[in-house]
Length: 86
Image (cartoon, rainbow, N blue to C red; front, side, top):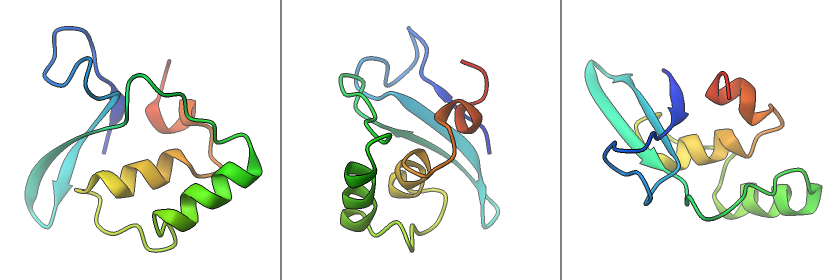
């Protein structure tokens, strides 16, 4: 399930930051998520804890939902590893 930044000229550019594609229960999906004008301030432990509690990241749901991928971005794993590359 690749996750990458949305490139200029693609649907969602300027409105969303990331796009995730894959299959879930035999159906293909495309999820665009993230505010392009906001930084992920997940290095602050208090902000990370509050975000993950507010979005119920202990049970993020299926991977065809934006909440799943947002919670994944706010995990302890570096965003560069999740996105791959840049």
